Image: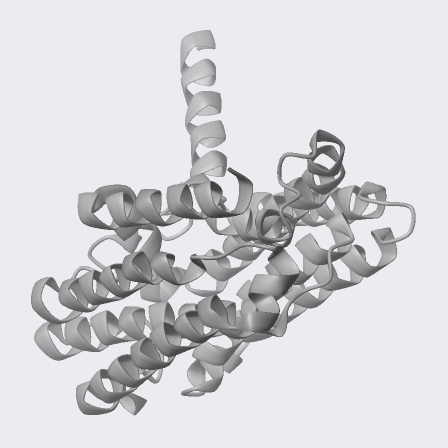
Length: 304
C-alpha cells in the first residue's frame, strides 16, 4: 500500500509538472530583452532586479496553461498529441486543477509585487491583464478569427513590457512592433497546421477552425514574414538606433533573421511541422544554429 501511495503521488506530481508546460517557459526570456538591447545585460544587479519579474511571469504563464487545458479538455482529447495531456487524459481531476491554478496565480502576483518598490504595482497589473486576457481567450475569444492570433501577439508584447518596467529600461517602438509581428507570424503558422489537421482527419483541435482557410493563412503568413524582415532591417540601419546604442554593423544580423524566417516558412509549407513553435526551436538544428548565430553576432556588436 505504501509503495502504491508513493507511486500515485509521483504520478500526480509529474502530471502537475507537465500541466504547466515547463518547455514553453522559454518564451518568457523575452522579459530580459529590453536590458539586453540597452547594453546592460552584463549588469548583475540589474539581472537580479529582473529575475523576480521573470519568475512571476513564469508562474502567471503556468496558470494560463492550466486554465487553457481545463477549458480545452474535450478538444484536446480528440487531438493525436494533446490527448496525452494530464487533464485531457483524465489523470487530474477538476478540483485539484482549480486549486493548483489558484496557487500559481497567487504566487505570481506576490512575486510581481516583490519585483520592485517603484514598479511592482505596474508589473502586478501587467500580470493580471495577461491572465485575464488569456482567460477570456480560453473561454470565448479564441473562436473569433484574427482576434485570437492578435491576443497571442499582445501576450508577447506584455512580456517585454514587464521586462521594461523591471529593468527601468524604456522600450523602443521598434522592439514592440517586431515582437508583435513575430508572434503573429508564429500564430499564423500554428493555425495553418490546425486547419490541415482538420481537413485531413476531420478532427477539430479548436472550435470555429473552419473560419480559417489555407488560402488566407498562406497569404497572411507570407505577408507577415515580409513585414518582419523589413521591420528588422529598418531597425538595424536606422541612424537613430546606431547613435543611441553607439554601435555599427547591426544590419549584418539581418542575415540570420532572413534565414530563420525562410526556414520557418519551409517547415510550415513543406514539412508541416509548426503546430508548436517551441518544439520547432527544440528539434530543428537549422533554427537553433540561426538563433545562435544571431545572438552571438549581437553580443559581438553590442558588447564586444
